[in-house]
Image 1 (cartoon, helix red, strand yellow):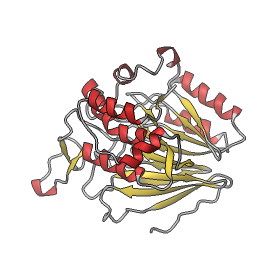
Image 2 (image 1 turned 60 degrees about the vertical axis):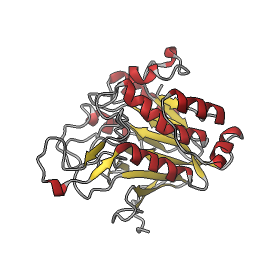
Image 3 (image 1 turned 45 degrees about the vertical axis):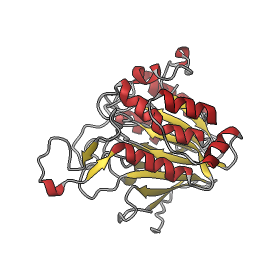
Length: 324
């Protein structure tokens, strides 16, 4: 099963913040939500994040350039504090009315290779969201280490690990979370699991999430993407109720489609490539006929802030909504 972090109470929030060696400022009304159930949560709203790349050092900044190792002039740097970006994202999501009941971090939670100290900081930054009643789901990316993250989550039982994939069953759609691991491989066992689970849930539209891009060389960086991406796309193409595949990894906001299947490239929350590229998160609202996406940039003055895209759940007609 995937890694799922349930909501926490006021006491758990305070205790957890102290345990992770830091504090997070959170409004009293948010803590009150944690103590009184899921009041104010929308079960048809999901916050979508990817590539948070949190460092063990909350003050560490990254120069947003083309990609690591590319020489650039000093004036071309756009310095970004990764922890601040995730904290700002959390505040924006908590301020929504109603708040999303679920949040998905679609891989590359950590900055380097999934060190324990990185995950302690990552989990600390997620605590305000959990205290606001939001359930957080995490997939694994190439910068992550599942074992080290699991070690910090003793409430997740080891015997439940098995296939690291799972389903979030919502009213209007089922969300399938896949584990493409550190090397971009789903593997035969997971592909067979996905085919079986999709066939058993053909009564609802399916939205599928995995960290790696299924096609090579998508985004601003040349990369091979998911090694068995062709097999995944074939599987999804054969099932008309599979409406979209969401991925991160390439750190770029883009969207297109293959027949009935939408391909949604999530932007990085914190760590991005290409000066001027959008970084932020997606607000997804599910209805009976569509999944409506809106881009929230960290820089609200960015030209793409507020971009919208609609995934039709009941027909094959693509619809792009105007910017707001």
